[in-house]
Length: 293
Image (cartoon, rainbow, N blue to C red; front, top):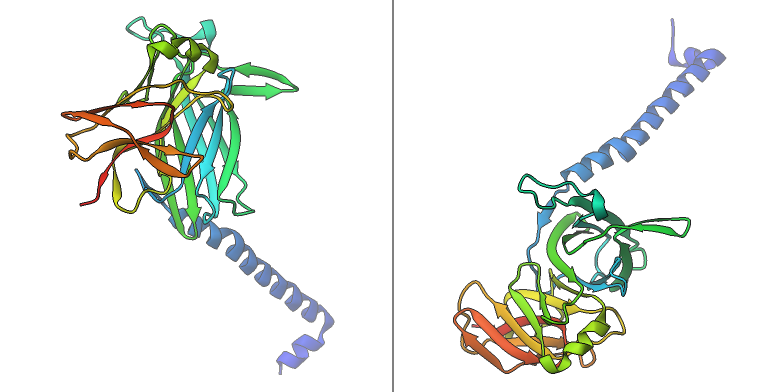
């Protein structure tokens, strides 16, 4: 009678059984590593996060030549994975095709990248080019003005997507006016400081998905913006106008975050319906704050 002992005692049968067991073990391992993990990743869906005052956020700075942005990510220490997509439109010099209305249609461009979060730092900085470089020869996209920044951030089994606008511009000294991508914030340079504007090279305004730590008794009205010029440059004094979706409470103030002191500085603010104006001696992170109800 054929028994398990007799089967195993046969050298050929023993080797055959061993091979089958190894194949089964290897298949199970492959399933666990590739199939099961891939299925888990597919289940993980991103949740759109419009704004979280205590969440991560990105401040953008223009490079002096306007051919790149410096991405400064803040409040990132507790996140496992961070990546970004920078989308914008370029006129690409003389090669841009005209639209049906005869105007320049522009060419959609995009840059994607990952942030190395291995060290779990609370802040990261990375330069993003408008174009490509190879062997120290760079080809830059031209006519870049408006775009979006999408942050993909993962923490454990939760994933978030934050989409914000930005507007980069070479300041017009005659006008002295800088605007946000949604046109709801205007920074008007004082006439007495107009000549200083030419020294700033480029400026950028981007809205934020989070904010520096707010006073415990304050809340954000509308968006939080970052108004910046290249690192080591100084934004001249000017007046700030912010338009909200609706009239704010009378105690609302245009407020700027001072990086040096780590405090929010309230400005003497005039309110006319849903429009607020104030004078500022500098730029930076700017928003409207009001008392919590």
